[in-house]
Image (cartoon, rainbow, N blue to C red; front, side, top):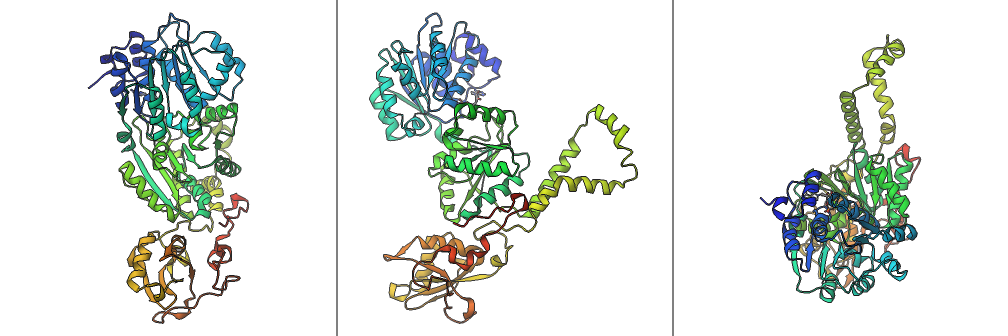
Length: 581
Ligand code: AMP
């Protein structure tokens, strides 16, 4: 097995690594370190955060640094402030024994004056975000004239953030650049474009594929309709006491909104996104690292700076568009040999995205039910009982108890006392989950609600005139939705329209999925049909929807099937109304 000592790194580095407790180099380190030490050619390393890529470039960089020289020799460009700080911290640990080594990080969102002063102390290594570096170049606060090594870290993300021109400008201003090392989680034409413009005969090293499959991650998904997303999140959080996680949203606004709502409900969470200033973000990170926060609600970009190894759960409040982004998110948990869970809340329409991600990560996802109220209460009860069982009261406390408390409860029955204590602890949860709704959408869920038990008859605006037969309609429905053909019953094809039955739990999803489709160029429209026809009768009258009149596409808010969806959730919510789409 390859060990760090076989790399012939300078002694100070080997010692520091051993002090840090690193035993075996990670796959990306095994691949690139020997090359970058002996033959520091240009390279592209395809690896994500969490693979040990900072050390993969950081150790060779430090190996080549001449501490006696007081000018910038190595430049690391990185997309975000958090990542800059993280790289600086990591590299400072590796270089802890290199006397005279200075590593400075410069990034936006912090006063530039302090950074200019730090640059005057002549660092050999500068870690920078492109925007701030250009600002410093314009102010002549830094010279890149003698930079020999440039690392572009998370190049794909820098390009996503619109830094292409800045990167070009910076690289053009490094006349002594001999070695360019580009790291990226993904390979795109834009990334290749940078390589073509600025790199010579590069070698590529990849651990991306191997790394997308992390056996230690349990991928779970929960199917909820869009308007139930927030409530489903809360239920999952309540069902997971002891969670230490990251909740991912697509937008900064969502991160802000979701975290505010959760905070108001008493959850220990905070948002982390690009609209927050650096001070605020650092404060949030400190609170998260010290476990004062149970979760962070973050956007993808902001979360790149979260360097925490013991995340228990990643929750996708919304799935990302790009399956690769999913692997970045899920890779936040199950780091350093630990195991973790990645939960995704998806709408019925997004089940096909799950299949796509399954293929990428080469792992089967587990469809799980959003727990009902009784399950949440039971889970929290057992968690509390475990906490009691493992509690170790201080000796002083025992004294206090004996002297003043014992007397008060001397005559109280033990069972009664336990009941009271548990009630006090759980009454908020019990209140909140009294009479809650089933949030599961889809077909394979337990039938709990009244609607879920019955079969629902649907009207579709296609008939024989459209070339439809029973078989063709069945095929069209199964190809366009996730419903199993065995669950579609009582198909009736008429001249201009048709009817069929599906389980109540599936009706909404089938309507959503089919309504976005066209059949032979005709836009498909579905409605819930009246059940008056009963079994054996063909067809079934359409309901008289207010304003819909059976003509134009009715709005969902007019639909009786939605009337039950505007509801008041648990009492802790203070009367929060579930939003209609
Ligand atoms: P990175 O991918 O660079 O963000 O590194 C992820 C984490 O793994 C950091 O906390 C590193 O300190 C740690 N790490 C890097 N290389 C090793 C190694 N060979 N053995 C153990 N931990 C490592």
